[in-house]
Image (cartoon, rainbow, N blue to C red; front, side, top):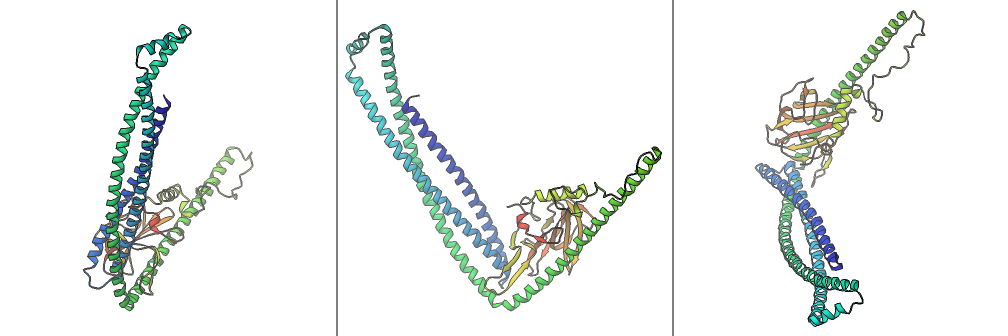
Length: 444
């Protein structure tokens, strides 16, 4: 390959690789934008439904705040798209400059070769060049040189044609990039305007809630009482399961000791007491089967319990949602009620769904609690040393001790203390400590 051919190939590879890298990033950004737009539309519909209630509610505030957050993420994503387009435009302009410069160089060299060929176009000069060779081998070399010189002119002409074509394509791509940038900026401006409208609407809801602070304080007090009663019921259920697991473990140890004694007695009879007896007071091994790299838990004293725990852990961030659709309106932990002095503590996440929505188990397990707690239906399922809870149910389709699979129907969603359709989803560890369900559920 000639020097010019190498330069041209390297330039084409560089341009193509740069475009592919930016195209992939742009595709990811556009996919994220579509997901956010879908989420915003769902939030808009949910918020519109809550507006049927003349009184502003905490659910309305939660929905509009999530809508604002999602729209801000959307605007930020569009900003990144614009920056990507700016970078792409800059690279395209730089490539066009290089192509023009390279094309000018190719044209100058080609022009010189044409002029030289024109000056030496006569057959006399050609023959004189050949016959002036000192020997036959030298003449052969001169013939090969003249042939390669003609081929080089053809290569130069082809390189010029390809460079012109590539330059035309790059100019076309640059023009498309600039148009796309303008369109993206228009979308961004529209989203910014809507974002300002959302913030104004949020201010109105906050103002209304501030005027109902006493009423809301009473409502929050009832919520906290219910949370504490559910927490006590959950702790009692987990403690009961823990005691049962310890009893089973002790029973297994006792049985193993008895089996060892019987085996030793048979061995003593068979050998006429010729061998020393095994000390049965030594610690029994092989009962607690928890892996060496895991902290001990009675829930994992059996292979089944350990396997279920590990399976649940391996699905962190990948667990299915307990409902097919819905929007989180209450986050895990302590949430400050904007515009008021109130805050709310939640041991799980509240998902807004229509009343009667099917609620399903997120993993294989065993039901350890199914019934009312302070007048509210709740289901608890054991997954090794982890537990999931499903609260605010209008009906319960399972019973205590029942084995369930991931996706099994547990019941139907009911209403929250506000009277809106919702369920509360919870996750606890073996010490009855609540975990943030958002870190366990897969992203939508």
